[in-house]
Amino acid sequence: MRFAPSPTGFLHIGGARTALFNWLYARHTGGTFILRIEDTDAARNTQEAVNVILNGLRWLGLDWDEGPVSGDANGPSKGDCGPYFQSQRKENYRRRVEGLLSKGLAYEQEGAVKFKMDRAPIVIPDLVVGDVRRELTDREQVDPDFVIVRSDGQPVFHLVNVVDDLEMQVTHVIRGEDHLSNTAKHIALFRAFGVEPPKYAHIPLILNIDGTKMSKRDKGASLMSYAEEGYVPAAVVNYLCLLGWSPKNNREKMALSEVIEAFDLPQILRHNARFDLTKLIWLNGEYVRELGDDRFYELAAEALTRAGLDLKKYPAEYVKAALETCKGKFKLFGELPPYAGFYFKEEIEYDPAAAQKDFAPENKPRLARLREALAKLQPFDADPIGVTLKAVGQELGVKAGVLVHPTRLACCGNPAGPSLYHLLAILGKERALQRIDRALARMG
Ligand code: GLU
Image (cartoon, rainbow, N blue to C red; front, side):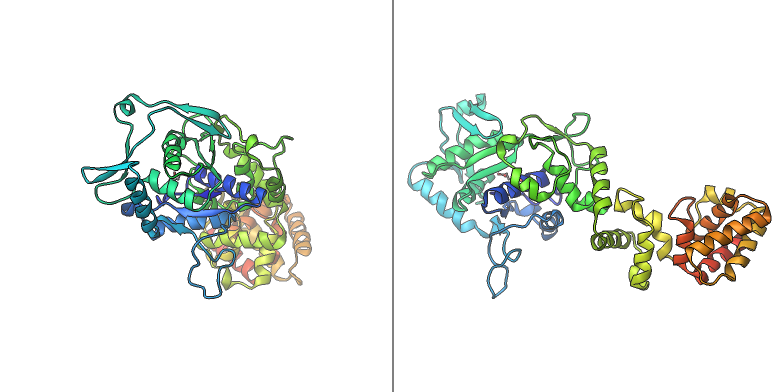
C-alpha cells in the first residue's frame, strides 16, 4: 500500500483520508505502507510543501514503513526511513522508457515520448466501484496515444506513478475517485511492462455537508487547520475512518486497534461521503473527555503555546492546577486560550460589555470590602474563599452574584470561566488581590 501525494503546499482532508485508508489496509493485512512524494513537477516542489505532508501524517500518527534511510548509520528503523521522492528516481524512469522504446511500445514525436495506448476498451476491476469499462473518448479515438516524457525531458505523472507502483511492488492502490479516469492508461502501461496491475480501489470523494464539492477554501478542507484549532488527532483519525467506510455494526467511536481489525475494502461505501463538522466536533468532545491527564496537559499546553502564551514562565504545579479547572468545559483545545489564558498573562483585558455592567460604580465599595476580607484570609483556598464571599455578601445585604461577577471579571477578564473560588485559589492571594486592585482603580 502507498500514499503518493504531490507536494502542493496543502494537505486536503481527502488526501489525509486516502493516506489513512492505505495505512489501515496495510496494518489490517500486515502489509507495508509506503509514502511516496510525487514531486516530478519541480516548479511547485519545495521543502515547505513536503513538510506540510510529513507533518500532517505525523500529526495523524500514520507512520510509513519503507524508503531510503535518511542518514543514520545504524540502519533503518521505524520512522527513520523514507519517504521516497520521485525526483530522486529519475534513472528508473529513463530506463523504463528505453525499454518501451526498444520494444516499439513507445515512440518519439517532436522531442517528446508517446506511449502507444491500447485501442480496445479497458475494463478496470475496481474493488469499490466494481468493473468500470473505459471507452476511448472522441479525441482519443483520433489519437489514443499519450505523452509519457515531455519534450523538456520531464517524465509525466502516468509513467512515474506506474513505474513506481511496479518497482515498489504495490499490490493495492487505494486513491480518490478522481483518478479513475487515469486508470485505463495505468493498466495499459502495466501490461506494456509485462506486469499484472495492482488491485485498484477508488474511493468516493468527500463533499461538503450540503453536497457541494469541497474546495480548498471550504472550512475543514485543510488537515493542518485541525491541528491549529486544537482537535485531538485520534478523534480526527476516528472521524476520517467513518468518512466513506462503515463497520457493519454502525459504531461511531472506535479505538484505532478496533478499526484496524475491522477495516476491509468491501465496506468502503460507494456513495460520496459528506463532511459533517458538527459530528466531528461532537466526537472530539468525547475524546477530550476521555483523555488521560498527561495527554490532556500536553494538548492543552500546545494550544496555549500556539496562542502565544508562555507556560514555561509558570511552575509546573501551577499550570497543572490551572488546567485542572478547565476539564470538561470545552470540546476543542482551541477554546482553551480565551477560556484560561488569564492564568498565564500578567495583564488581562476586560470584556467590554461585561465591564460596562459589572464594573458599575455601585460595585466598587462592594468589591473593595471583599478585597479587604480576602486579604485577611489564611490559607487562601477555594472553600474558605467561598465562605468569605458569601459572608461579605450577607454583611452587605447583596446576593453572592453581585460580588461574583465583578470579581470574576477583575481576575479573568471574561464573564464566564472556571469555578471562581478555585481560580482565585490557583492565582494565589497576591496575584488575585493585584487584579482586584487594578479593577478597583479602573472603576473610577
Ligand atoms: N500524485 C497523485 C495525487 O496526488 C497520486 C495518485 C495516486 O495515488 O496514484 O493525486
